[in-house]
Amino acid sequence: MAAQRGHPEPWIAAVPGLPQEFTPPQLREQLRRRIYVAALWLGLVVLALLWLVGSTRPQSTGLQASVNALLMGTCVLALWWLRTDRPLQPIERTLYAANTVAALVQFSLTRTGTVSDAALLIASTHLLLIANAIVGYLAFRVREGALFSLGSYALAVAICTWGLSTRPDSGLMLTAVRLHVSVATLLLLVYALAWYRSSYLKISVEHELLARQALTDPLTGLPNRHATYAAIEQLLAQFRQGQPGSVILLDVDHFKAVNDTYGHPAGDRVLISLADTLRAHVDAAHTPGRWGGEEFILVLPGVDVAQATGLAERLRTHLHTTPHPDVGTVTASFGVTAPVPGDDLARLTARADQALYRAKSAGRNRVEIHHASEPLPALEAPG
Image (cartoon, rainbow, N blue to C red):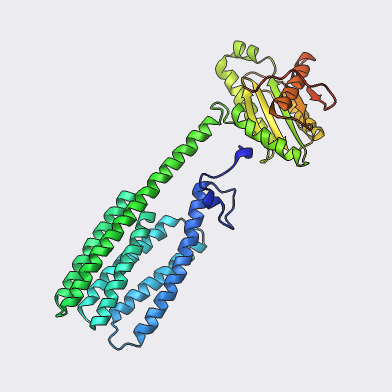
């Protein structure tokens, strides 16, 4: 519904630069892309610094240089991929695979080198495992991500233990064991956060679906009567700030005869067709809704009564001159009104209803206006 467009994640909708017409899943994907781009540029800077430092050390191995080249190439590929607006999942899985290979190779390199170099390599590779686990939970479902994370961690621990077992430095093994335990705890935390995120998104989607169903007419897909109340209240709030607005109430003529003659399924198709017509004739800022039965409403913020009358006349002419494939010519009667000072929802809709009643009493298939100078009708609380 145009008057109630919003996002279940307000923190996403508030991110500068993200188009607000996107759906929540689209917004989440765009935010992920931004995070990936920032992380990849940072990763490139870090890898470039490591390459420069490694190139000045005589004990640097060609295998380590190959690992750095693999990671830098993957970062460049990922940046190009994101720039071309391609799907996220393939590049996420590519990043995960490249990081996993890099971590395992780096653990194997602990067999050689100085104690300080090996300690630094062990620490940095454990950090890579944590970062890779986060990527894994983004690239795969939670269960798959957990299995890949556990598998890569177990393999990394085994390779690291094998590499350090050949060294005489027992202190390195103790350092590695401490890091293994710490990283295992952090990986459990990452899993818990991934599980919570997945559960939250599932609940959020279900809540959004239930909320939409509660405010949507199941037959026509238009906002139902209660949903249009919010749009009318917003129109009245804008009117109090000096902006124009109008409401059109319309009713299908002789609809009972349509049902009696052609059957209720044909009558339902008439209502669905009318709903499609209303959608096609209004702007995105306007709210077409099903008021009840064969009655429909158009809430038109920013549209004065003369413009609303012209729209109603165009709709009336379209219906009259466009036969329905099942039942032939279908007409409708229209009541048009605009808010006046002191209006509330009940008064505004009652005036539109009175104008509609006048159109039907005058022979149907016509448009009537309830002017501000006319007396208010008897009021009933909206149901």
